[in-house]
Image (cartoon, rainbow, N blue to C red; front, side):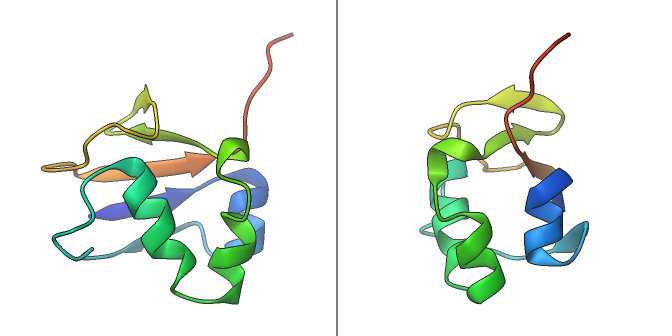
Length: 83
């Protein structure tokens, strides 16, 4: 699965994307973020406040409880505002 990072999430992690194979117990966006936090200090810093990171699964905005099974891409980004 491809993971894409945008804006300050990308800056904190230090990369814009990567390919990962999460373990089977990782079933939702929230599970994925929690699993990523354990991959290193930079990930822990990026996902320190779960409410401050939004996600999209295959380019559709989703809530943290959205399933990731079969997803080709999950993107993480900060909240956006219009204007």
